[in-house]
Length: 91
Image (cartoon, rainbow, N blue to C red; front, side):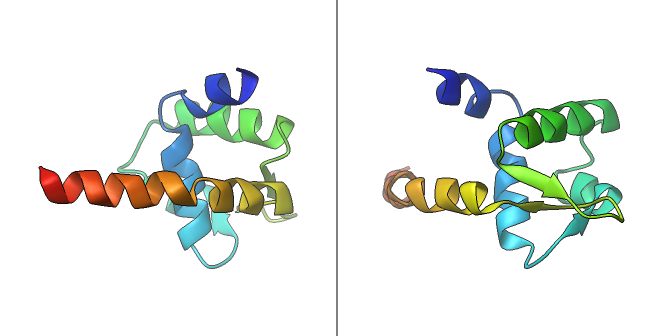
């Protein structure tokens, strides 16, 4: 339930997705733009929550990326992505 609580928070999955597809560490402002210019306070809060959960980390230059645990989470969400594609085709 703790994982569902964390992942169910607004913008959390989008942040994880953008970090995953980013191809390397992403700076705060660039990540904010990729997430449709979400507020900086929400992004900061979510990144802190994800860092505390061990899913993200930042470089010395404040660029964010997924940890190995975060990469494992993206892999675990693969079946959900497959399902969502199938569902979207039916809409």
